[in-house]
View (spheres, rainbow, N blue to C red):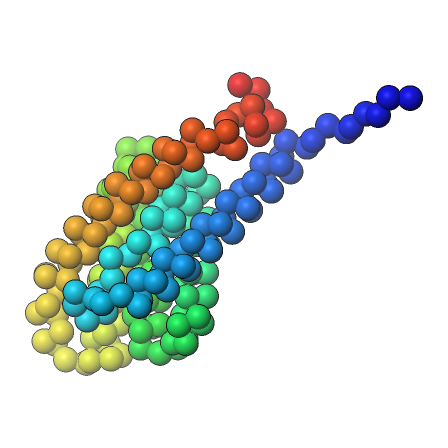
Length: 190
C-alpha cells in the first residue's frame, strides 16, 4: 500500500511562516538595539535606529500589529539585556518607540500604498525624536532649554530615518522576492 501524505493547510502554513519571520525580526531588532547601545553616540540619547529597519519590514510585510510587536519586544528585551529596564534610557526608548510606531502604523493606515518605507521611516524617526524630547522635558530634565536642541536632534533623526527607510525598502523587496513569500509557496494559486 503506497504512503500518502495529507495536504498542508495553506492558512496554517502562512501563519507559521509569519510567526517564524516575526521571531527572526524581533531577534535581529534586539541584537541591533543592543549593539547600537554599546556604540558611541553622536549626541546624548541619540541612536541611528537600525532596529527600526526590522519594524518597518514587519509593517510592510505583515501589518501594523507586527510592527508594534517588533518594536515593543525590541525595547523590552533589549532593555532587559542591557540592564536598564525602567531606567531613564528605557523611558526615553519606550516613549520614542510608542510615538514612532503610532506615526508609522497610522501613516500606513491613512495613506496605504501611497507612502513607502522611506516616508514611513522619516515619520517614525521624527516621532521617536519627539517622543524622547517630550519624555526628557516632562520627567528627566524639566527645563524648557531642552527644546533648544530639538531642531538639531530632529535633523539627525530625519537623516537616520531616510537611511533606515532605504535599507528597509531593500530588505522588503528582497523578502518579497524570496520563495517563502511567493503565492505558490503559501499554498495559494499563482
